[in-house]
Amino acid sequence: MAIFRQYIAPLLAVLVFLFALVAVSARIFLPSDMAAPAPIQEVEVSYQPTATDLPPAAQSNS
Image (cartoon, rainbow, N blue to C red):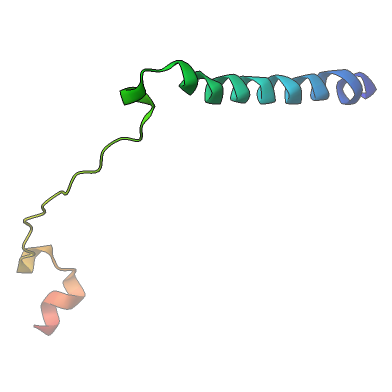
């Protein structure tokens, strides 16, 4: 168990850190249009609830 605590766990932590560093740094090499955040679009929702969409307790009160 001492080998895991002294060698393997710190190595795993360093490897995870290095992987995250490489993944974040890869944005430098992307084209400028891909490095930007995704565009946000307005989504129109045309949903009108009907009496059948209501829960049973709400249907009996109306």
